[in-house]
Image (cartoon, rainbow, N blue to C red):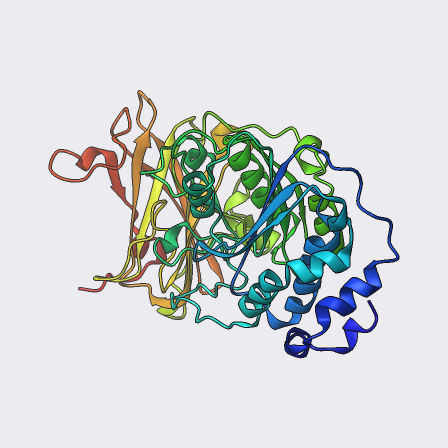
Length: 443
């Protein structure tokens, strides 16, 4: 393949004889095995791949078509973001199609369609905080296959080529960026409640191989959380995530050989039945990010007002009872409120971390954009559970490099699931931020 590596992606795609050159280099390789059971292959490709990886993707897909995929099979390539067909190829179970040259000639039209797709540069959606790098929409693509694939008797093997970090222009709050990943509550919800929810019976038993590029992970824990989520998402649909890697050779080989071992059999993950809330959780960018709230006590709580009134701020709550409390915070009047159903805003993020012990939960909000400490409002809601004496906990605020701490309590003995309005006051407690910081509230 050395002759191919001298071309950049665009030059490679413009080379008229590329298919014959590729075929001639592959003829020395052993012919395909004898015809086996009919198989269906599906390849979903992001339309937003970086130019630097298109060359490898193009050569890998052409090799699949002209050599590696077995006789007596069909393969359909899709745009897995816009949910459109790129091309489809049927490989007959006839001896002449063991020849890469024969396939290159017969499939030339489909290879040109693939070339045109990869040479394109479609505009990415314009959504704050989302870049749509190599984005694809697995939930929508799965539904698309459910509606378009009619033959459910053949086994199906799927190759996804694109980012594992879901980004949705229509429902951006479900996007996996900045360390966010979905809770298990999404996996137990219907589709009308979550884009990751179940929408009907499974397409069929799928074997899924996922190729992504570079290193999209903030840390190993984030990679583990996202990998686990997609594995469980597919498992709930009678599918199996077999390959999940950023090595093209490994992904293409596993896909063409229809490997059934790998990630799908190497993990023992299961959905947490207690994690029913539909929310996006976040992995801190650094381990130290939550240390100020995780510690059992504040070693040196601030005793005097901050020296500034404008700056980044973190607000956290912690409690010990096995109940569900929620934090709400707004930087100023008219701004977006951060809470578990709205975890991102122009000013910052909502975090939640479920610790191993249910009695040691905590959550917090970080305003990365400087806020006026005199205008910030925050509340605690008793969302779910029973607590006869009423919830008790601690609020901690980090501002101007200092940690402020105060207790909080709620009089209600059971949760109200976040309801607002008349008669709900006992389930909510305002956090006295300005009193904690020893400053005056803005009028």
